[in-house]
View (tube, rainbow, N blue to C red):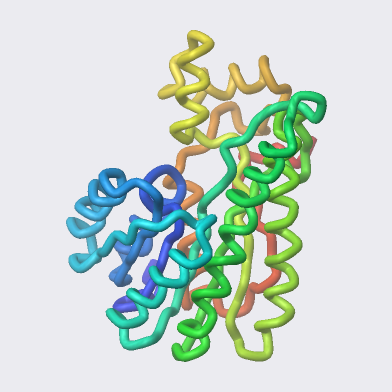
Length: 265
């Protein structure tokens, strides 16, 4: 399917690995001009080499911590100069690395979860909006999590941050609708991300096998999907890319589960 992305200007925050990279690949495959933002230069450069070998030969990496508001604004200013002051697509694919039950978490961990999981998105949207408003068309796609709908006691801070993503995204959809800038959310379920695969290996499970990975998730967390396997990053990236594209012309304010059917139980 042609998503209408040829020469579209796209930024993926958190695009160096995992579902962010999978989304960036889908955008590049359709001919978008892709920039990825993240904290680790080596990771970003490897990802950029991959994107340049696809449909984005001028893919660019910008090192910035989404929690650092000033650096985020500098990053978008750099990209604005590169792209004539316009941006069509912003994807926010970052998330907090905080786990623990309510009884275990410190105030510092709560602050880090909110900063990484929600305030980074706020910084990116604030910096990107002037560029999005100058473009002929604009899309914002924010990554949340299916755990906002099915709670896990060890993800209380993570889930709280993602719930903020949901609320902010819905409000942005309302705010930007008159300008026809569409804002949507993707909520992945149990997906074979680097973190989840690494966890599986730590408990003696082959995390590269999505069927065994789902069995381990079911055993340890009680979060099975209707499908008998974990999802793959590329499967989430494809949905995010559609929401970011011109093919999506009338969806805004939506929260799309990509979770193997786990919200049915």
